[in-house]
Image (cartoon, rainbow, N blue to C red; front, side):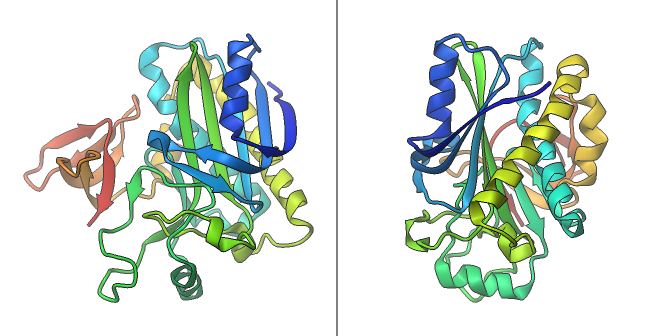
Amino acid sequence: MQFRVQSFETVTSTNDLIKRAIEEGEPEGLAVRGLRQTAGYGRQGRAWESPIGGMYQSFLLRPEVPPAQLPTLSLLVGLAVRRAVAVLVPELEDRVQVKWPNDIVVAEAPASLDEAASAVGEGSACGEGSSALCDAAPGDDSRPRHPFHKLCGISTEMHARALCVGVGVNVARPADIASVPAGKNIPVYLDELGFCEGPVEDRINAVADALCDQLAIVYPLWCEQGFEPFQAEFDACSALSGRFVRMEDLSGNVLAAGTVTRVAPDGRLVLRTPEGAEVFASSGEAHIR
């Protein structure tokens, strides 16, 4: 599989262009990129302006798979992002993790990154995902050290019987940091992690190209065999494995709580409660405790 890439200087959002292409009957395999977005949005419709510094890329996919398989697509795209980052910055391979269901994070960021993040607030160039790091308020010195920092967010939407998959990766810290929205997650940028040589546009395109390459490898196999060939890889780099989490809905109601043991073949997060029972979570925000 090879993606057909369309690149733009400024777009409302790359997802908007993919949805328009879906409505026009464009076949799968289209990838749309924008250096900046004026009306970007992510999971649950959260909106923001996306300045130059992030990789904003969306894909048009028309997988002919059972509906029950679709929830694992965001996990698959997360693995593709992780692989792409590892190709570009090999020394990060052991630190870049996939955070169920739609984030990529960098584990155990150095203290200097904590200090930098505190100085600019808890914004993220790729928006807000579905996992909260902690409940303490910004600036609260009593809050626990964050176990990881957010590098990427992924959104997956069904539109007119096709899929629009949006990916945002923090490549370079934006010059106009005030335009980055506040959020629950402390961001980290690839330029702070060693990927900082050359013009920022070239680095953004390198990340986008690497993602296309990796997704072109994993997506056809996923279409043929489902998520099972990738399950062991996901569990090995899962940011939540072995952590006690509380799953909450958007209103803050607790859906489940327990220690994460694995991800099921259908994409659900598997928790073991303090009583020893297994609970399968298909939705909710995972609050680490």
